[in-house]
Image (tube, rainbow, N blue to C red; front, side, top):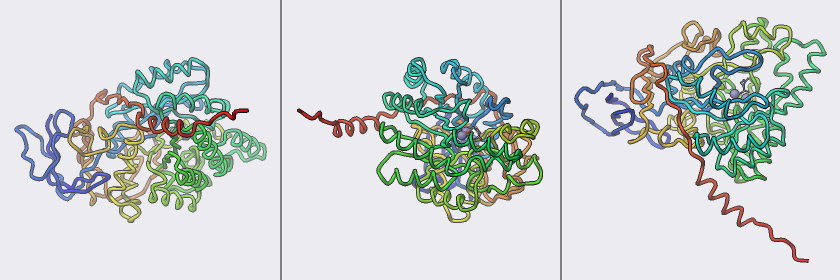
Length: 479
Ligand code: URP
Ligand code: ZN
Ligand code: ZN
């Protein structure tokens, strides 16, 4: 299929230029002014619009089995919803249960994801440790294109990784040239606070943020950072929600450490008053971890994004409907943790980021696409409008407005955390592998058209680290 995107302004992370974009056989074949349309090419009129790399959401959980239920959004509906909002690739998570064979879990997730309508790839969580896990990490990196391993420092009694697991897994990752990622919350403290609150009669969703104060997050972020520093492995901290974790990241980066930080659209835009809503369903719909925070934390997160100390934006798209959230009606600890957003991330960030002057258009592209592509080593195949890149493209109409609602969204969940928010600027056309899959409010997707994307290990980082390690090699004292 050949598509010519004509008359638009191309916005990459590093430059803005007036250019047409020719897509052929799934790739970008030419970028330049006044391109002729080959015979039979479809034309997308991008006059007055921006042509940007499709979004990459580096943190989603489609059909995740979690807290006694399964996330309502599956890989087909979730990737379709993403395309409607301009997101053309997700990075989801393989999360093995305690003691579950890692390769078995990996193949299970690959099977679930086969119905995806856009490209996707996986981080793999390390939830327990023995020699077979050590071995599986090698197999995943060498044979399956996995270059990132995730560690949940919370969810005690389920998937929590303690320090021993972190040290083992981080050490193995460095041998393999992989990056490590963490969900930073002190799971022991959260467990203790949950119990205390519940015993004091705080059983509703208002107990959720009280049991997960920012200090728990800051402590865990700092602990992961210092472990990564000692072992010399690059670290990516997912869903930073508060000043404390941002400060830990900023400090480490200033010290020269390779630490990256992600922020969720929800944490930037929603505050913790939602947990005190009188309607259980509304409050429970917002239960996710780490929780939404107060306005001061939100302001800090925007500053983190603007300063470059936070590099990526995600959603942690993990949807549960009201009947699932009701599992925790009498006990906030049993409300399945998770909220949606894969469809809305780009538009809410444009509206509240670019239109307010907090981000330039180029910075918007960086934080919604290119930085994730670089950090997870798929750049410039993804995250770039350039010849040879995958033709995953969003044509962005800066004048279009819409009001976000669960009644009209494509996401397979009965609530939208951005309900009622009117945004100016959204996707008019989304292209996946050079095919127009979303135009003028309608999806035209094919079940299974999405491909699993291999991500090679990080030779460059690791060569540098080896040189540094050699330089710092201690010499034994001769006595
Ligand atoms: O509440 C959340 N975030 N649910 C999904 C699992 C995780 O912690 O990322
Ligand atoms: Zn998490
Ligand atoms: Zn998550």
